[in-house]
Image (cartoon, rainbow, N blue to C red; front, side, top):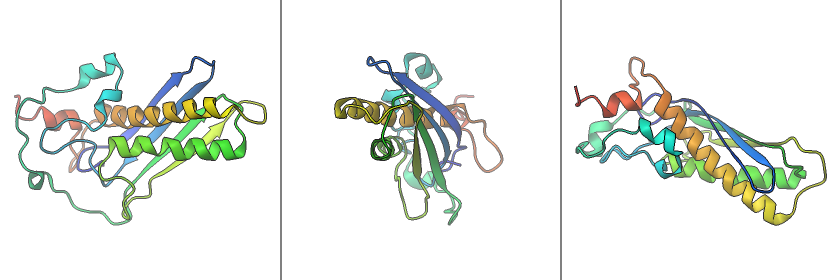
Length: 178
């Protein structure tokens, strides 16, 4: 469950001009919502690729107040876990920095993020051989890693099918369209 809608697992990635790739695999079970309860818009939806935007609903209708979308707080049962992997040859310190930068992707897609009731965490893996990359390349890898985490979260939520007690996001936003 992700803020009252079904969570799931999402994957997204990018290829950098420098020849490296960065991917994010995210399991979404957050306390925070991935969408604005007043408009239905997904937080961070601008990070979706053009083909992924076809899944977005018409947000023109009023969704009601935030109180209309209350859900029970399940203490100790929420988390968003991500693994960010790159084929760049990062040092241990650079891999740690990559994970720190990728955390921003959670905050872009889920609100509130990193709550005391969540266990949000990002792990980083560097599969390349070597002693590290130039700081400029690490900066770009980190920026793209955060974008990949955001996209992976949104894809998980968009593709999740509902279950009793946790409707899918697409089911929820289209419930009045029938």
